[in-house]
Image (tube, rainbow, N blue to C red):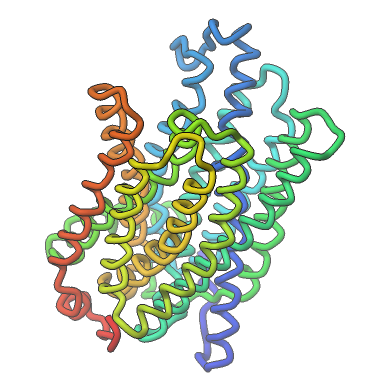
Length: 449
């Protein structure tokens, strides 16, 4: 195996150039998050499965099971998350083990791009093709994210990490929001068949993702790592062994583990509120799709300023305090959502605005905090665990909502039940001795932590 291209000099100019290139990947892959995952693919793939089943009362065959069409997409999401949990740690260990972060990022990103472009050919009753493409796209999306996040500690010093992470997150919201807005114009106003409009929108996310990924591919740089095995097979085997050591080593970093637990809990609340908002607006508030789409677009663009604004607050008041304050806001938002009046679009938009302000900052500052409590040289391995915590959120939040709906048959009780995630996350994060965790990981403690 030839040695990866490595950094030969580190100047302020090259550092800024690399940081700017890094931002563009968030701009690139956020199109998949917004256009594909959030808006278009779920309803479209459900429609395709319904066609294959001969109607809503029918079933589609999958791995020997008979699934209802409405359960097909959620089944694919569950399988893709399980695959991500298995694959992401190996990808992270491989990236650190070989030093080929840029190449590995490119491979997984463009595999996802090709799969996303393939959605254009999913029509009629081709639900199996749509499901297979989604599995490839979502798994590679997550794997590439692991490697992308792991660049943060290498391109930004401890004092500037909050700012760089917030800029990247804000840039991603802007890029994802712009493409989504363009696609919604096509979907709502173009004089073409609805299915074709959806397929064009899905494929456009692949084009966007692939085109803008070229910028970080040109600007990001590998770092030198110790010499490892000469063959790819041995490199993978070494990566798997290193993964085992990483998991075992978490016992040496109990405060890092506590931070991961806190993040899993409060991010669970964040992700569940986001995913449940449209259902709550529809089923409980009686608001139509126009208001739901409007709120999604507003959140995308307001979140840009929110991410940057909370990044500036972190410089003044400290990163941990800022995230804790954002969790208080989340708690208030969920509590207020219980009292929203049925049919009140103004109140729903007000809540969406509040969510947009804290959403990006909570996630961006959590990423920068985590980057400080992981050992140098093993960033991708540890960020794979971070992403697993992120993916694990989908299960816990859905479980709490399901139980609340089953017991109370009330969407209002279900939404307010999510308060527990923000309260418990606040308590766990408060208990993390962040300066000590940073020192134990072998990193510099910034002044504003």
